[in-house]
Length: 445
RNA sequence: CGGGGCGUAGCGUAGCCUGGUAGCGCGCCGGUUUUGGGAACCGGAGGCCGCGAGUUCGAAUCUCGCCGCCCCGACCA
Image 1 (spheres, rainbow, N blue to C red):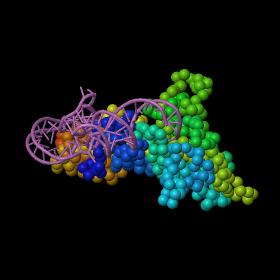
Image 2 (image 1 turned 180 degrees about the horizontal axis):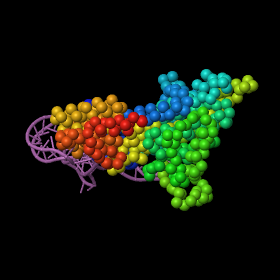
Image 3 (image 1 turned 120 degrees about the vertical axis):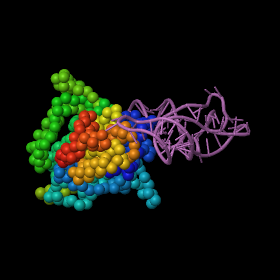
Image 4 (image 1 turned 90 degrees about the horizontal axis):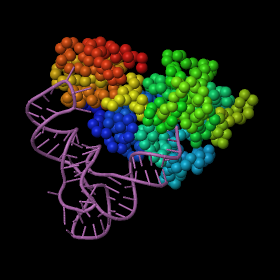
């Protein structure tokens, strides 16, 4: 993309109603624009990040064998009356009436609807196990939205629902989600720690939430630092291997890690003192097992081997996709701006043309642009007629992981400058070498 | 939902107390000089001062009502 043809409304000054870093930076980098309290438009740069996150989530879900669907944002109240939640949910549920005076709602979650879909299409245990998921906008009419997209009223979420014949099968689905979530966050460049959690209004027995450590997090967290050392790395995960998934779950959930809701001071004290950590975290996902809470009242039954109709065991599992954008920035920024991990950066590299109009510089930039595009780096070329300082500041603000600076001075010596946003380190090398290096870095993503 | 605060140009703000031509910085447009870290100068465009009533000769300013937004707390993915 060429910056001169793009829409990137960056702000030099910070809008007054943004308190935390991610909110400030998202507004300043022209990623979002607020339309009402807790409701945002996603401008081109922000939309790119959101799409990259969605792609990773889709890939990892499908790798785990989960099946994508798409359910509507608006739901009929009838389904929620069946489960009893239409009246039980409280004011966070946005209720709407259509022209025929029918009660509708803007879905904050989809347990009822997915259960309805399941019961109308599945009647035998032979169809199990099955996990359906979608990525869709949700709405919770929070009393007090804040922190930009981290706690908006409208938010994009991946929510998945598993259907299994037995408790054991359902726990396998739980572990599958645990492992796939770990992979998902790791791919995004985040360290998310599963913590034992409260089940809240969705209800359920077994549940973990995934928290990204950040000073601005909304929850206080207590953990054994050993858990932050864990990494899935290149490990081959076989989602059908129950023993392996059980082991992964044990590995991540054995070290103490809890939010203040479930914190147990006595247990915490048993951790060696140098590993005992207290901090704050941003919740970016949660997995639940809730058994037959919905399948029984809503009649989601299958015939088992004996022909008896039994309610299916279910769980639901969410990843806060739009919130992740904020969490990523909280985890990766400095006083100059955002520092995107390569896998989720809106563009892989920025090419700064220091002398627009100079035939040699223009030609070199075009060449680099073509090479990076061909290599899948997805570059952003700053071909505006602006001063160097302004271009550098923009690149740093929007946080592209790599910057290639091309000017007459360097070209005279046959070099360009390659700068890493994360470390701030620069090196001079030929344009070809710079492109080759970036191609290598992005090849694995 | 309790407490506090704020709505003035795209963004940040002054003016409001004490009523009388709506100002500044950034950004934007044109020009000249500049050009490897947010340039300088000259010229310019852009405001129903959140909305509605009231008081007054006269309201951004005072009064009342409404709407919107933000912060702290409770709540929450």
